[in-house]
Length: 576
Image 1 (cartoon, rainbow, N blue to C red):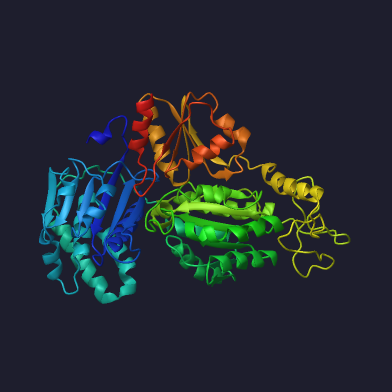
Image 2 (tube, rainbow, N blue to C red):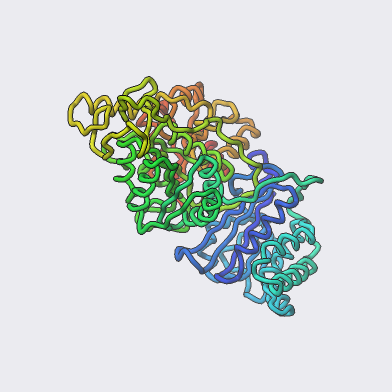
C-alpha cells in the first residue's frame, strides 16, 4: 500500500463498520475492541452518529497496532457495511483507497458510488441469509465473525469476548450470537490479511476504557466526592459512569435542573469542604460563567469537565471540535484568572483530570478541563496511566485567633476554613473584599486581591507536566488536546523521512509556563500550531501572550472530520 511509504509508514490496521440504526454497529465494535485487548494489542475505537443524537445510522472506526494508538490513520484498510442506508452521511469520515477491502452484505445492495475509490478488493457475503439460518440470529454477528477471521483474531478469543459483552442480554441471545460468529468465521474467503500484526505470547494487563470513563476515574482519584450536573451530549456518559462509582466511595451525584444550578451546587459543596465537579459541553459551559466568576472571587476550588462538540449554539452535538477554547479562557467577566487544562489522549484523561482536581484544591481556584466528543466517546486499549506527583490538599486554617480568609501570603494562597471551624467566621460572597473578607470598594483592596488571585497561579511550579514534548529538530509542531495524537504521529513520520521534527502538546493552557514554553520551541525555524477549530483560537492565544516568533504558521480546521497525520505532514511539506 502506498500509505506504507517513508512519510506514512505505521505498523497498524484500520477498520470501519457502518450500518443503519438497529444493525448493531456499536455492539460489533465493542466486541472487536475487547477481542483485540485480550490478544495483547493496542487499539482505538472512535464512533460517529447522525445529528439526531440517539438512534439512526452509525459508524465505528477502529485502529489496532502493536504500539499505543491515540489517533485515526489516513484511511481504512477494511470496511464492513451491514447495510448502506444513509451511508453518504459518513462517506467523508471514512476515507478508503484502491487497496481497501470492502466487506458487505450481498442481501443489502451493491456498493454505492461514494466508495468507488475502493474498486479492487470487494467481498460480498449473504450476511442476512446466514443470520436467518439461526434462530434469533443477527447479521452483525455474522459480519463480526467474517471480520475477525480476516484480521487473524482467534475464534475462541472472539467468542469469549462476545459472550462476556452479550451476557446481560440473556443466554438465548448469547447462544445465537456465538453461532452467527462461527458462521461468519467459516464463510470468510482465504484472503491475505492486509497487515499482519504480532500479538505478544503472554498478553499484558491493559485497560479498555473510554475517555469519559477515564475523566471520571481521574476525578475520583483526585478526591472528587460530589458531582452536580445536567445531562448534555457528549458529556452524559461521564455522569453515568460517575453516579454508581461515586456512591461506592461515599460520594453523591445530583442531577440538577440546569447548568446554572449545577455550578452553584458544586460551589456550595466545595465551600463546605467537599471536592466537587460538574461536567458539561459548550452550551452548558456558557451558562456557568457567572457561577465560575463567583468561585474565582471567593477562591472556592471547583472543577468543570467540558466535553467539547461542534458549535456554536446546538451546533453538531455528535461530532468533535476544539472550539470552546476561547470560552474557557476568556468567558468570565472581569479579571478572573483560573486554570484551563486539556487532556491529550484517552489515557491522559485520567492524569489530566486528577491533576486538575489537585491543582484546584491546592490553589483554591477554578479548573476547566477540556476534552471533546472524539476523546470522550471513543474507547481505547491503554497501559495503566501514571499518577500526578502533586498531593493536592487545601491549606487549612491553623491560627484561628485573628483569622483572615484572604490574607496575603508568600505563595498568595490563604488558609481556608469551612463552616463550623471555631474562630473562623468571615463574610463569604461575590463582592470584592479585604483580607478578612469584608466587602470593600477601595482601590488598594481591589488591587491586592486581583494580584493575589493572579500570582497564586502564575507563581506556582507546575513542573514538567504542563506539556508533553517529543522529538527534536528545526520543525516544531505545537498543539493541544485531542489533536496531539495526530500531531505526534506526523512529527514521527516527518523525522523518519529526513525532516527532523519536534512536537509540543500543551496540557496546561492557562496559565502557560512562558519560560518553559520558550525553551521548548527554542531554535525552531519552522513552527506550526495545529488545532481543530475554525478560528485558530490557540494560535491567537499564544500570539496574545507574545509566545510565538514572527512567521509561525497555523493549521486550524474545524470538525467534524478528525485531524489525520497525513494532512499535517502535507501542510508541513508544502511550507518546507
